[in-house]
Amino acid sequence: MLEDIIKCLLVGYLFGCISTSYLIGKLYNIDIREHGSGNAGTTNTMRVLGKKAGIMVYLGDCIKCAIAILIMISVLGKKYESLPNATDMVQLIKLVTGFGAVLGHNYPFWLKFKGGKGIAVTSAVIIIFCLPADWYVPIICIIAFTGIFRTTRYVSLGSLTVITMFLLYVAIAYTGSEVYGKLLFFTFLFTASGFYTHKSNIKRLMNGTENKLEKVSDKKMPVNNNINENNMNNNVNNNMQNNNMNNMYNNNNNNRPNW
Image (spheres, helix red, strand yellow):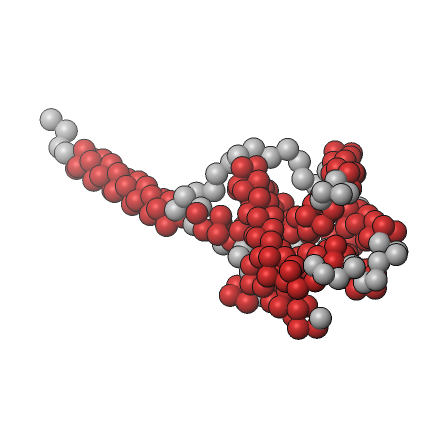
């Protein structure tokens, strides 16, 4: 079992390292980690690049997690299908692979381990873990997040609430499982990771200084900063040339004799 856990974590991590927000940012010729909050995630992308870019990042983060989980279910699922607790073993595969994806998302090796906070990826895990039997759980989470966000405009508060609800759900719903300890442990890791990556947000929430996500429009970042800098330099040079020409003209008029 330990070998399979390591495989799930590794595959999940590699897929998680696909930083959607960083790649989307590059389409705008920016490093998203150098703008806004510096976080390579959905919320910061939405603040910096607009709603459409934020949605693309969210969907990309969910898809990479889903692909990793589906691969590991197809690879390891048959190994446990003859066991009495085969269903719960598949659930464990989902959690372990999903947590690997969170680690990859938060700490991508090719970006010097500076990534996001893992909430979008965790939301994908919640959906995949609960479907199809407990389909109502993701709906309840969405309602809770939406209600908190619309009331407070705090994405962080809604996110922390949802990952706490997920932990409580697993703790209650899987009490009779033979792998209950493992399921609860890995679910706890999602919650602990979320609270850890949001530690600065929690401090600001307690101080009343947390950033709110107001309504965002699809504003565009400059497509090419170098072009804008060149244009500014050209404008400055043109203004200087015009001033020089005006000065020369005025000097010539001043030097003309009065007839």
